Image 1 (tube, rainbow over the protein chains, first blue to last red):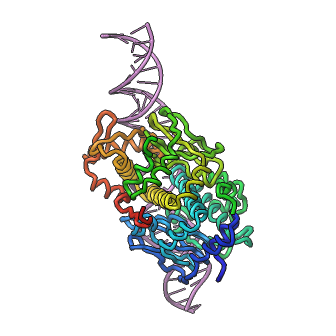
Image 2 (cartoon, rainbow over the protein chains, first blue to last red; image 1 turned 90 degrees about the vertical axis):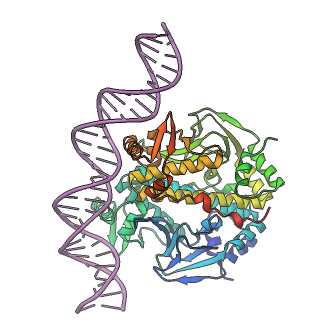
Image 3 (cartoon, rainbow over the protein chains, first blue to last red; image 1 turned 180 degrees about the vertical axis):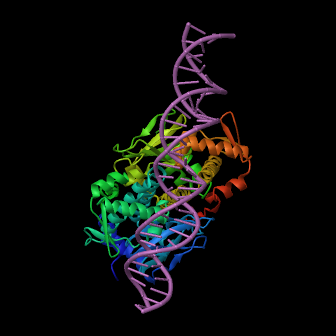
Length: 243
Length: 243
DNA sequence: GAAGGGCGTTTTGCCATCGTAACAATAGAG
DNA sequence: CTCTATTGTTACGATGGCAAAACGCCCTTC
């Protein structure tokens, strides 16, 4: 059996037993390729599946009645996607691949049985769900209470730090894989204004761009501007009992 | 033993066995009174406790470096508060009582042991955490992509529906227990602009106010204006196995 | 019952931020 | 080497922020 991307990712935070790793690997038994731009899930569609993202990137979003789009979250390999389907049978959000990606779908009842069999895995998923919630509140504060420039800075830092969690080879420059319009839809701005901010930050020497990749030149100042603190460093998974 | 507020609330959604009810009641063994305005938790404080809210209301918020406040969530009796402490040892947000309230604190390790003993409870909490996450994404879309008036409408509807979940006697008018400044801090507006919107909505016959209470006169139109859909109706907890 | 204080609400004028529309420039894909 | 997607640019206007003050209301105190 191929290793579990999900377990590998978790193992960076918390020790897992072989039995648990094997259990988690079950969730990735049926990988499915999706092309860049393809929809993985549509809002309001009846859903009984969740996903583990194995390769590539995926984003979730909603479209409001007036046609405007809010991008909710960008997902990276090892992320657990679509857990809303444990609560709502109709998808509250859409999922689209930003990349040629590989997702591993599994039935939500398979997940339930897994949780029953491995209480520690249940606790782990509960914990990850709480971490996602905190990430959402950070973005809420950013949208509700900071300027356009601060939001762009915080967003870039967020993606940067999450890219690095899944790709150790990244040091300075990285590929955002989002257009400026998509950035705007994520942080509540128009593409025009995102462009203004990005160019301004480039002039100020905060970032630089070359052939689609972006470099954060002054992370400390970007963190100040964006009122951003990297929570990944503060994660403390002692709560889980030893493996 | 006194009944469990948490279990009572959950029982509205999903059948619970007596054993499970008793287990959940354990989390409410040590009720603590807090006065209106008192802090229950401060941001960055080391925390090892979670809470079940038994009476009154509590809100969570953060203060940004420039002094502005973002209110993250208003909690109602039966709500499970502070689950971030399963992931982060330092509180990512502050908690304050909006009311004279009663919270039941319990150690996060007590929760872990409970989850190990009762996998179905673990699944239930996982599920509730996912529901919270969806609620946050709804607010994210509201802040990122809708006008001031829409945000006020959506916020009022959200509080209204959640009040009714915990208080069956509420039909038309309810007590918001928030100042206009607090509403503004919740939805990313100033108190001045909240006031403009509230008065406008009153003139239009959408809402009415009398001695601190508020009535939603035209819920259908408010839902349209706020792009709001009540997700509580759509919850589908079949995912949990039978009790 | 009058006086004072504190809190929340209401109101105003002015102005910054950000959105809209429309178009030009550039770059990537086939 | 064209075609399309993305980025860059501008002028103008709307939305919502800011500062400051007045108002109303409840509560206390005399």
